[in-house]
Image (cartoon, rainbow, N blue to C red; front, side, top):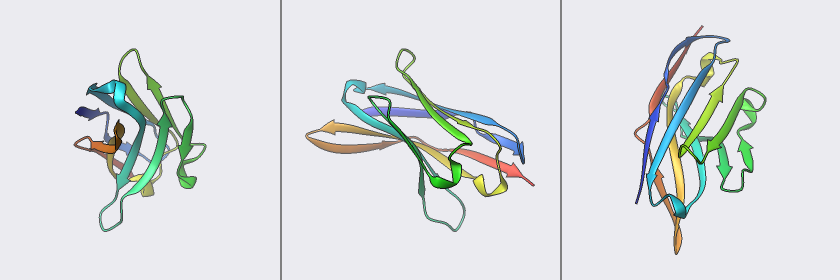
Length: 118
């Protein structure tokens, strides 16, 4: 089992910054990839960014150059630094971990609201 706890959401003006944190615990040695997803009201959930155990990253096209995902293994925490925020970034952001148990098993955090005012 893997447990994920997010923090760092909130209300920010257009152009502002926020940093989301996702603290992970449990069977962390099984974690392969971690990522951030978001879901806005009335829209499908979308993958924002991922980071592998080797440090490779991948981003949603619309956040490239503005968002940065990073991982601190000493603190068992994954971060999503969000700069130059836009109203369209408003969503509930959820942390995700893919753990290897024979096949991949997905774990989710509870989500944190990010609201960008125009």
